[in-house]
Image (cartoon, rainbow, N blue to C red; front, side, top):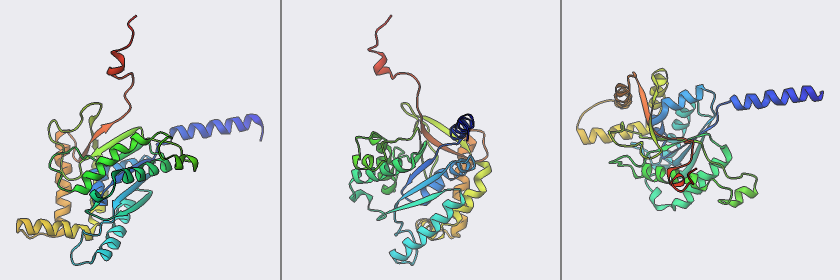
Length: 284
């Protein structure tokens, strides 16, 4: 190959790489959390050609009816992976921490695991649950969102130096999507500081999202059974889950002129220097 041909080939390869949408890393306590809160958006991003990786923090061993924990874990892990793959997810990583017990694990240990995944996959975008939302009853979601938000602080190569020695230097995403798994954001909730509220039209992906949620039969049975016990009402698992997901997407969409939508507390790079630096700048 001539030097000119080689240069042309390299230039085309670099241009193609620059045009390829970057990877996405999702950190979630359970698969249903991220599918319910962000499944349509993830399906849209997969359609864009993004490689999507989902790290499920818990082993989901407690979400079933009539199954022992070991069988529950196997069933939920299998159903979760199939549902996420339907949305276009490239890889599902089950970290296997005991469900309902994330609070007993060092947050530093959990953050290190997320930082390690960030170095391996080098995501442009990162999703995790919004632990700032009020009245969040599931503490696994709270702990997952809290430590995942802190993980980018360790994006420099001086953190986890053993990973740097192994050839995985520091890395951090450029955009962060905080998702609220089971209810719309309320007025004045989210979007504070440098963050803004972002709405995504998921009308085209809604059927795929609903199908994926329907595949979580084991955890859906536990979720619906809990609500039946509380309400005293009789309904089918699938009817409850699909009605819940549809109503939430319609409620969010109605606020923004869309049929079905998802919304996020969204952080991205902001150009220019921050105010606390500019206030000390010399004036010409």
